[in-house]
Length: 166
Image (cartoon, rainbow, N blue to C red; front, side, top):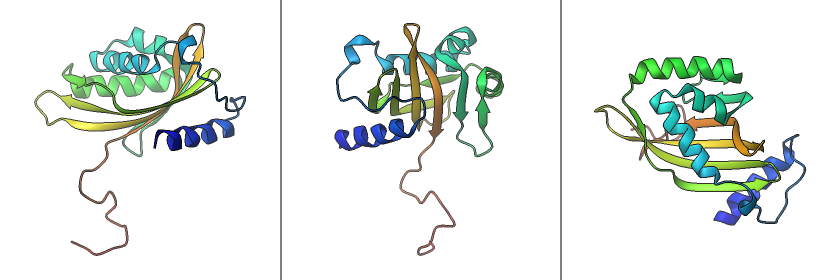
């Protein structure tokens, strides 16, 4: 299963104009732990730590939120999304540990797919799934693209999908 995810990531990176092809060598020892960077970014986001967020994202970052209307570009767009979430969560948000991690690296680009438990105050915990693209530059990983969603559990994700109605 892991090999299949790596192949898919390789195909995506190969089609990305920034990639220089897919290498098969393991370069993980040359660069810091990518999952730790993702966790640091999520923790900073939940705490409202804007300087840390700014340090961990590319100036031209592109973010796709869980709502279809949430599409943000650059640091200005990230700031808008951050301000809205900070007000909504009122300092009570928490991201758990990353789970179901799938990572692929090629040169200075890497994909990181994962799930993470998320909760705000007394509300029930939910799982958020992330698909992210990172670039290694100047000794650090920086997020260049992110998509997240809250997957459904034991229900159809589309009421308009064909099939028997319940």
